[in-house]
Image (cartoon, rainbow, N blue to C red; front, side, top):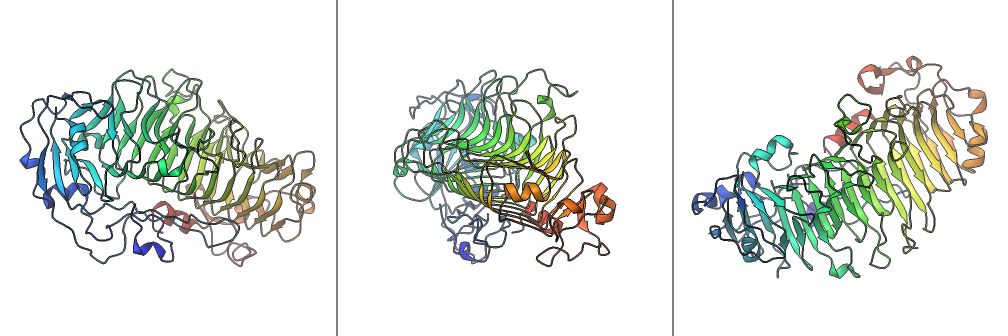
Length: 593
């Protein structure tokens, strides 16, 4: 994947979408026109736009549809403009948690070769095999191509783009939704095998405006497999792969285990829509990676999965010492629909296994910024939205570690509990260097979600963690400690809504006693703990009796900035306002960098 010259600016260029370096970066909606209108040159289809092409399996085609038609692309020129599109908002540099160090550029690439058009009923695998770096393959919108397709390794570092030919597809940098399937061709697997997989060290493929799904009634395992769970060296992994404005769906009736298996290097998933990843009694995800060093850019997607919407870890890798690293997860909407909830009027009748919205079991230099996480309840777990821990899953990864995690500028809402951070579940190197800052965490612990309402759960000796400038409203506890003490913990400048027990330690009670035991030598300053007894807390914090005394601009409508007249303005330990910066949350969600 190309690293833009703009990548080394003040925002570190964390995968900003936009024009490609060395080219104007024509979007998918205009590329055909700029290359002479390949769709105009297509041979006459032998089936209707909804007809199915003959199956292609393991790279062997054998179809009888029309041959692909080719035209020539003109080389593009550099505009000299900076990248556009969604830019992850970064927190200030702080040694407590390093930022991703290998940003990848998911901008639309320059195309210098030919356009290969595949009409409905045509031979998609033949087109893929024929394509050379710099080529694009256009697929007839509305057509269905059934098979198990393979992306082979090619010689050269130019990109091969496989895209819809419909100019009605939303423009680059625009998230697609279910209605946009009308502008897309569809790849369908007839079995539980992947509809698309890489072969060997396949690289530099980009899918744009494609719907991928199993055939009706098929409960697929991994719909897309990138890289290899069995590779024993990073050099064996596929790399430089992008999914842009795609729909990746399981079967609505029977579900499916996983949308994309991410055991590859340098993968981007942007402005796409994932739905119906669910199973009974088994973990499911929209995306999962474990045998990979990264980097990843997962930006501005809708992500719907019953188990963990996204997870890294969960299985022992075959590559020694590998840790998924340099991961950007920005501007996404994570959700579990109420049609999966047993006691909701929208419930559809199948009890899928529900766990959490995001989980890290291993990871290094992970940025989670500007996302919305909502709707998770007690089911197969206790309803935490976010789970961050370190796990040597099957005992074969003693180097497992989760470290340098930045969870910033996110909204977490409509959950039983908020964020759980723990050191290890046994046999790993533990969790360390975690920053949780400027997040808004609301609507926790309602009986419909489970009735608990822990904003933060911190357990078992996490080291070097900073929790600063968050605004949150739990039910039972703002923070609960348990297990081993946490070393080098900083808790500053947060606003904690009124809860039953405030900042609480298991067996140590509320306030100073809990902090002295579970965060020895730590920092607790500049915090606002609504409704708490100031006598049981350290000096240097604030204890308004009610939320009204805090002085939010418009809490009823979700604006938790402080009014100019609030007594707490400027009272944070850093001289600013305590709580989350609402303007930065909005900027992060919009991709304003």
